[in-house]
Image 1 (cartoon, rainbow, N blue to C red):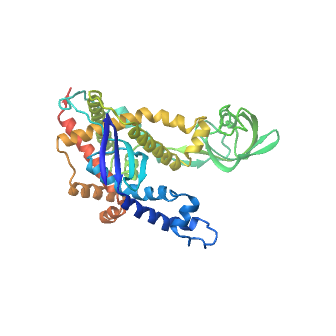
Image 2 (cartoon, rainbow, N blue to C red):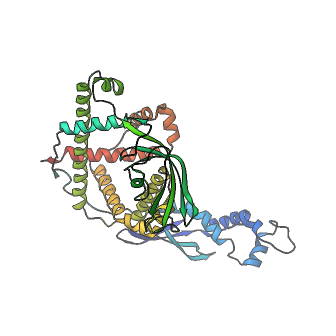
Length: 427
């Protein structure tokens, strides 16, 4: 095979590959053997017609496309290796010629890694935000812990108030007809949580266990079920139980019951220490982000559109995973918000561009500073992950497969950011 570089402008590279006719004919023969059963030729059983008979009936080039599809994955990597190209997207190809004399001539256009310089990445000035945890923040954290450890107690004959939990049966009716999704039994509704349609919870205040009430509400005009959007409906509700929250007293007994400490004072000190660690870590992360942003601002890069689009794909995929974790999916989100996938991609394009640029810049600095991640460092990181997942490190490593390379890349970029922070001027 002969490879010839035609043009390189910015991140776009054009070249052509010439594949010898003998090699192409071998690929045509393989294509014939793979696809011959698709062709019906009178006088021959399916899959038994000779190659020349099929070509005579369907045209000389009937197997060319399949042959090129077989050849391309073999010859393309060799060509980009020979030309020393670092490609970053899928190539566009065209067939210029197929002949006995010249074989197959394939033209290729592809995006390659941009060439750029990173300057002034050492000594970047960043401000450190000092945060001292106050007693009020400690008390707030204690209160939240007490709320999480609160019990719900049924109170006979109690009238519902804001903050109470009403256990209800309900069914919704539109002009006297029950509608889909409007029914529930023994549902625990926290009054004042605004979980239900506006106005629903307020109409339960003052009711008691055993009461039945018609709740009149109007669905919001932007409600996701279009057949109900903006409609007035009636919910027939029965109150089965009224529960109040019993919050534990913040004392030494609370500390013993909910932590490894014997006194409330010790628990408070531990909370303060952990909140301070979290605040310090947040401050450190902000400095890191500020450094990356400043270095990127000082670096000009012509980023191939394909790299940005690939990152948009990743962001959309991450969003879909998050939605599935919440019991939704991308289609549901788009319907609820009245958008389409093109809108969603455009919304994330700028973030994708920033992320690609940051990764390019950090990788360039890693090269300049010879920052690498050893196998020993990777193994230690996997051990940490294994302890979190309560797995054996070797077992986790064996299940990761190619993801280990992604882990190694992430670790390298983190080392680069740590390097930038170590060499920054902190005000």
